[in-house]
Image 1 (cartoon, rainbow, N blue to C red):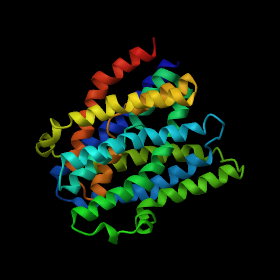
Image 2 (cartoon, rainbow, N blue to C red):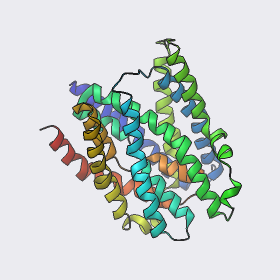
Image 3 (tube, rainbow, N blue to C red):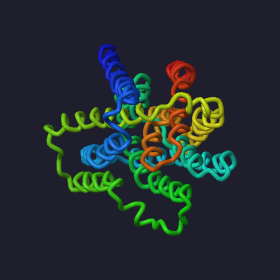
Length: 318
């Protein structure tokens, strides 16, 4: 493994994660740009960056016999904690659909992209990193076609509107789901055997970094530490879902599926990721409880970095 390359990836990861969060938080102390500006930044991320990246990524997504199992396992990796979170939220936040929706988003959306990529690469190298990229693509589908409609359902109930008035078609086919068109278009080009020009490789990387900044700056702006403290010490159940229940269940599923050691290890590592930034973005976009998701993001990330990953790294590299 190239040590210099790993260090560069860690530096880029730190820049793309920490800097926009700090800048976004600093923006709370200025009065020129308000909530509307940062909401539009999120919408531009979803309507421009996400469709372009999805299109370019699915265009070069290869299909092999073993890889056909990876999307299924990746989907289970998101659906399992989402289902546990759904029932846990109903018992924990009775009558508050904003909190219920935020809890479910925090449970099923994990940071398998930014943090997951580095963590998998450090253990399994480029092959594991390739598997992780496919899992990220599956999470895009899950987020746009499952999480966003579900978040809209929670928003409708929180605002006192009947869930029956929100049709499935109106939830899926909106401007917030344009990434689905990118996925379909890229997949069709892949199936047609049309090679993606190498000149577009740099474009994809540029959009990925731009997406990190335009997605994280509004999250930093949303952080309110006094409000976050309200949930900081009540998320032990979220830590259980993220770091114990989901990894154990995925260990069983990967063993039953008979996939290779590297693919199984990659899935297990990704299944133990902390709450994703996208959970906060979704909560902000659909007016759910942002503070709960910010607290889950901060708390689970700290637990993962200082406790969970060191243990996993030692166990999986012996």
